[in-house]
View 1 (tube, rainbow, N blue to C red):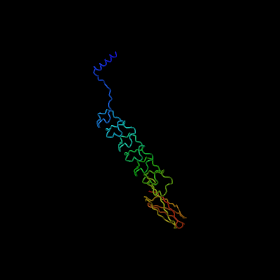
View 2: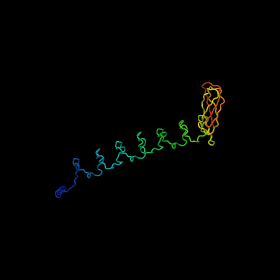
View 3: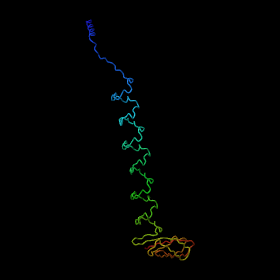
View 4: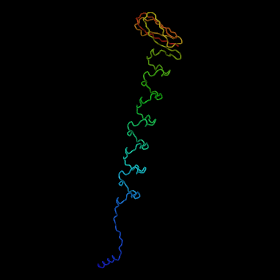
Length: 278
């Protein structure tokens, strides 16, 4: 039996032609030396075959990037610093509303050119920040001062003259008791309805001579007719025996007559007078 099988196999080996059987053959390795320079074109590269590991550092320049092809997702967080920004590259439209606060502004970097006209409002001014140096001379008008806001301490001494007082606005309650002297009333209106006025004054005389002496005192403004006159002495210096003081008036002056019974050289006295008339 064994001999029969051996002969049968031999016959098959001789009589049956050899059959082509598939044989596994290892694929040959393709190295860079096997590829001609410039032979690998874009069409030869499968989509997605080139990743970050296949790109040499620093080989992608600005010219290699398509326009607006770098989006936010491609940029690492914190990767763009001030050195990466070109001069004038950041525009107003690039800044989010309310994102620039006082910490982002350098000291003294905001000047008048950076502030829009009339852009500073009252709420933007710190309390007491506007002093006299910030106000243009002559720019504050009466309409800028709130009614009733000026007090006595706000008005400089002797700064208000008679031309600043409205006629007929001062009454007796506005004048302190005992503050008016004869020097303050050379002429005064007694009553507008009656037409009377009062005029007062005084003069210093020398009384060295003895006997009866006369003095003529002119009015500051003539009366229409002789006024009623009252005269008196005051500030008598080393003078004894002055008496018989009399006065009479015309429309233009007062005639004063008095008698000096005793005196010393160089003594003086003051004659005060008061005239009331039209």
